[in-house]
Image (cartoon, rainbow, N blue to C red):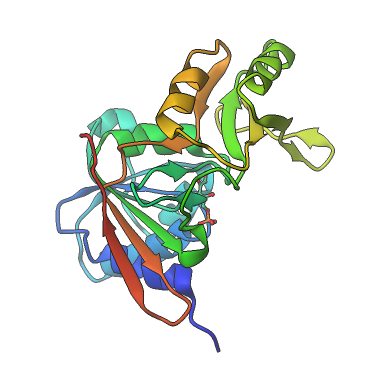
Amino acid sequence: MGVNVKQLAAEKAVEYVMDGMKVGLGTGSTAYWAIAKLGERVREGLQVTCVATSRASEEQARGLGIPLVGFGEIGSLDLTIDGADELDGKLQLIKGGGGALLREKIVAANSTRMIVVADESKAVHTLGKFPLPVEIVPFAWEWTVAELAKLGGVPQLRRSGEELYLTDNGNYIADCHFEVITSAPELALALQAIPGVVEHGLFIGIASLAIIGRNDGTIDILEGESHR
Ligand SMILES: O=C(CO)[C@H](O)[C@H](O)COP(=O)(O)O
């Protein structure tokens, strides 16, 4: 049986969780393994208080007996562990493939440390192959999508079967196909300037460490330059 590289990276990240920490729980198939491991450690007596970034992660954590609170009850966190759709050498990320980017960014941006966990396929030289998820309000979405198209990518509203996909916050997601993002900070500024954009999936200066699982069973750890 092959190595589960997502599990490998995620479980390594859980070693950074210390007794008494306030921890942000990410979303997705890699974060899943981090929550599973944290559940094991909680059963063994680890004391943590956690905030989930999606309903799915909340349900998983609750089922494992991990203590959960609402973000408003603690306001800031010690550590967030989350996956990514792409990460580059500066630990700039594309997130939101699972649709949870808004809550993920709020939680990660309010954490002293964010550890990204990923398999090696997510590590890229230049961001952009993965379509950049942008959360937009349903009101006037046609106009917002037209504004997004002016930034050089091709936006496509995400669907869930016949219906438009709705985030946990009741918004739409436009997946913007760029192929290559030459300057993530410049694109981030341009996206923020569009009324109707709630949040975008570029995480810049937020992640401080990346743990990357390799197919040969080894792990790479990259330090980033978190601005916080
Ligand atoms: O940003 C995310 C969800 O909004 C996920 O972290 C990202 O999509 C990676 O997911 P996975 O670990 O399943 O590949």
